[in-house]
Image (tube, rainbow, N blue to C red; front, side, top):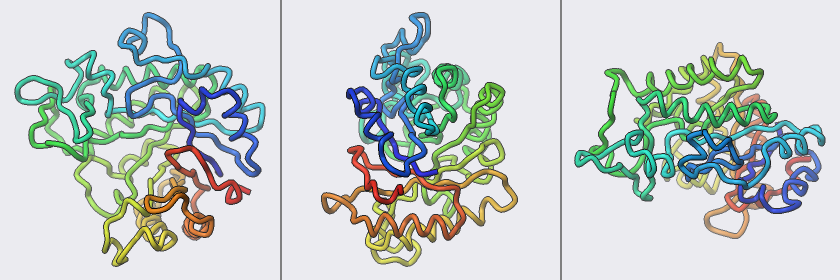
Length: 311
């Protein structure tokens, strides 16, 4: 897999999807189906909850996008952000994580999160995923499939909270989602934090447990997101190849005996300069090859990618 992430906003620009499909060597597009703002990239029927709450937007036609991608022989992944959902929680506070005063709980960015214990939230996200599958997407990749990691966590109130470790709750959702989607002929995967195989991050992401139900796990091993001293590296962002290698080593060890594919998200941007040099992107790719991953996906929030590394 040699692919890039495409937002629904970028997909709405005439000719933009064709630009990505014209990149030599690219064989995968990961397209936002439902993003971290809770928006759905295409119109669903009027009777659906996504349409009723204003989440469903006409950024692109799901069927036309799938047909265009497949016509180029490219694999299409649909990203579905699950539990961070300010759109759903604003319109349906009964489905949200709440505060003690009954208001909708929000993280540090002011974004509401849906209640991980509410099966109606699970089914809402699966209704969106199923629409993408019917349109022709090859894989559904769940993101933000975890408990919140920032904000006043101590004030969060969960209705119907189960007396179980958070990791079991997240795994139950993934198990349920896979049981619904896989019979439709689609692969199911999930994004996980790059350190989730190294530390218990307290967000319910246990890669080995999740991998039991998934076709692929995508660790987000972005070097700029690691604190100084992680893996005994003074500045993980300055040594991207080493940082990615140490992270994938832990994932490879964690997934021993599993058939689940390991495919990392690699960093194709810089927080300190305009672009990360191609040599530093290549260093991450070499680390991915060293640990026998099934390829890689590139992330740049602006959607501008280092094309030569895809060849």
